[in-house]
Structure formats: structure tokens, C-alpha cells
Image (cartoon, rainbow, N blue to C red; front, side):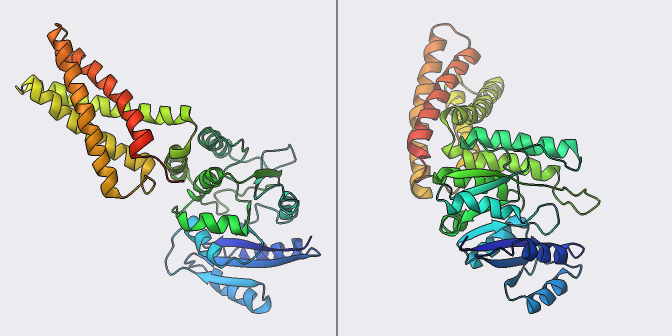
Length: 364
């Protein structure tokens, strides 16, 4: 083994474990041919963690301390560390004692052999003696991994694992585009690794989870955020069946707005012709907002002006189709509501085709 490994350790109020963690990393990764760089990013700790780290850095030149002036979250700390990482490979280490740094020696093997550019350390690949703790936490991890796999088309067993190893040149290309400040980093980086097309391997690792009483910070709100991140970062490049499911949600919500608006306008005396057009415009605005909010923010082809212009043109085309279908069915003695319903259904199909292939076509 002849390489340099940079380990990034985000730290927030970990005075009870940070010294043991850093020393554990140095001792367990004291391997012939492996140069070690430890980058600890203190995320505005207030419990004395910084003083401990500064003392360690004075005694060990391989340790670099970076500091945030305010607490920004794990993802932000990792982005700060990635900028400074100079090793051939870059890994992530939590500031607690849940993981065994020695596992990075195993994770380096597929990289050094040229098989992998990215390696995930999986807590679920093999049975082992382990501490039993929190069924719902494990269930949430596995569920998020399953959903992430559906959208990234990767067969990962543990998307939420801390232990992720990257070739430096690979992560340096991805890092400038990272956005998530907290635990949304995990699904975001997985989505961007998947879209990069780089070979990904997994390696079984050991895991000794700590309880919330011992300082575990991730919670159910982070799980909700992770679901959003999976949709937002994986959705635009997801396999077609998953894109259709997302558009079904967006399209159904927009169609519901269309029908409710149409019913309300006609109920309060608006003419059918005006109600058709007005309801469609409200639904089109809803559709655009959902597309941008859930899927395509900062991802669509071209400038915001060209995107909005293309969207307006497509909305005019689909409005004309919706208008014609609805009035045509009404002229055939169908009820206004059901005529509008079928017009909205046809509009949904047209919206899907236009948005996916023209307006929100993803940059490559």
C-alpha cells in the first residue's frame, strides 16, 4: 500500500469522544505505505472541543484544524474539509466511536486495484456480533436506502453510512455542486456519485452505534429531509419509471388545482370559456412551482429566462389543447366538470412529454 488518505472529521460538541476518536484513527491507520492526513472541521463547538483539538494538532503535524464561526451542520463541515483534502483518497470519519477506522484499509483495496472510484462501508452486508439499538432508526436507514436505490439505480445496502471513500479527483469534481448543510449530505452525494457514472463498490464494516443519550444527533426531521433530497437530487436523472411516478404526483396535484379552480369559477358565475383558461393558468403555475421546488432547481438546461419562456410557450400550447378538448366535449353534451377532467388528463400527458424532453432537460 503506497498512498495518502485524507480523513475529514466533522466535530460539533464532541469533547467527550473527539480526542479518543482522533488518536484511534492515527493508531489504527498506522500502516506501512499509508500516509495519513486528518482534517477536523469544528462546527462552532461550545463544549471545549476546540481546545482539545488544538492541543492534539500541536503534537501531531498530520492533524489540521478548520473552524466554522457558527454552527452550519455536518454537510457544510464536510464541504469545508473537502477543499483542503490533499490525499490520493478522501474518506469521512464521525467524531464519535461508532466506526472502526481500520476498516478503511479494507475499503482502499478496490480503489488501489483500479476497480472502484468510490467505496461505501456497509453496516448491513454481513452478520456479526453487534450492539442491539433502536429498531426504528435502523428501519429508517434501510427504507431511505431502498428509496434512494430506486432513484439512483444503484444497488447499495447502506446509503446512510458515514464511511464513504472517494478518489480525490472524483470528489473534487462533485464537491463544488454540493448544497446540503446537514445530514442530507448522504442522499445528495449518493445521487451525484450515481449520476457521475463512476464505479462504486461496497465493503462490510463494523459498527457500534451510540444512543441518543450518548450524543447521537440525527432525528426524524433529518429522515424527512433525506426523502426530499432523494427526490430533488436523484429525480431528474432517475430511471424513467421513477420519473413518471414523480410527474404523476406533480401532474395529479396540478390537475386537482385545475379542477378545483374551474369548479369554483363556474360556481361563482364565471363563464365556462373564461373559467377553462383561468383554471388552466393557475394549474400551470402550480405545475411549474412544483417542478422547480421538488426536482429541477439549479438543474434545468439554459438560463432561467429561456426556461420560463419555453415554459410559457408550452403552457399556451397545452392551454389551447385543454380549451379545445373541454369545449368539444361540452358540445357533445358532456358535463362541464367531466369535460374539463378529460382535458386536464390530456394536458398531463402533454406536460410530461414537453417538460421532460424540452424545458427541464438536464445538463450533462
